[in-house]
Image 1 (cartoon, rainbow, N blue to C red):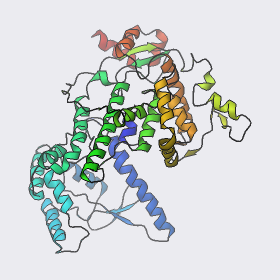
Image 2: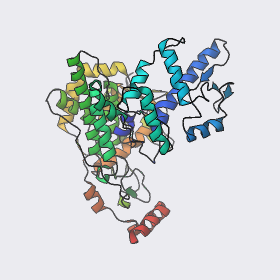
Image 3: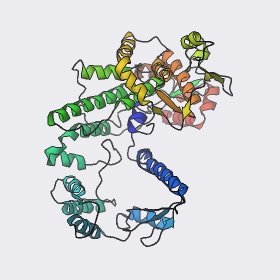
Image 4: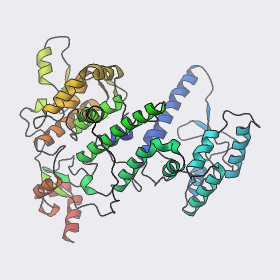
Length: 476
């Protein structure tokens, strides 16, 4: 769950994978889950005394020059199994096949001339309609011809939010056949994200690291207002798809923010200070009960410009300096501890290596949302969460939403997150007291910050070559 686009981007932790940047989404959503599944499967097979399995890959040398080079470096073969870097045995049965060989096989298996597991009708449909034709072979030839001019592989049908390349297949499908009408909103969301990539006003400018008493002010991940907008768009798309499916007598084709994922997003937005507690529930109420719509606008594409020069804001030497009582600025809850003191329900407290008292929370292998707790919230707690959201929060308490989910038993943390999230909560509470969380004004922050050349000696030394380089750029 922590690796999904929704939780990584909407929590303010990361940006989408744009061209020329990291490709984390491919690793998070494809490679890592497959690797984890295989390892579990292989362990189960080994426990039964079976020999090591061989994984069949569908890679081909003819796909692209880049793919061929990677296959040669791995020593992939179509006639003998070899061990990859993870020690797994793999073979590539169609490594030497051409495109024509693939389509001939599809025809033979699909017609029943050879025994197979599928008629390949859905695969042919996707290929054909992605180019706006009725023939998959013709579509593949069109895609292959265009791609070879650019040194790429052929058809590209990515995730609905994929930004690594401008995937025109979904637009072609929507225009070609009304059956894809459900995807219009998904395509609008993709275009909106692509068009606003270089809009620096939509970025979060507040740094996370204190050096010499200063934090860096420069565009990074998405601004809280942009995150709220994206969250609303996804909730609206889910609602519209539910209504479309109900009218057509179908099951919904997608759900971008199911309850567990929405809770995770809401909790992490609170922890990172990019939304007030339970904001997602308020948005859901607006859409489902108040008839408010959050439609995705058509916006002109913002032309690329150099990232603005970094400035620096003085905040002091630590995130807890201004706290009235630093022991309570993390994940601890004084009321809960006071009411349960001496009882079997009292939360366990441990001391970290740096002397901080933190909750000794139960942990699992990975971050997750407890399904039973989520269902209980939906049935019995939503009105209370909405009341708390509508009442507002005093400065420094923006993390109250995350703490509520945590103490309710709804969140499961990984082993490393117990102390890490306490650190984040302290930092966020400090920023909230300074007015640097969800509703801050970038222009106001810039006016309060200083350029690199104005940093005092200690801070200039702490920021090192980065501050010096930025100062030189500013002088130029």
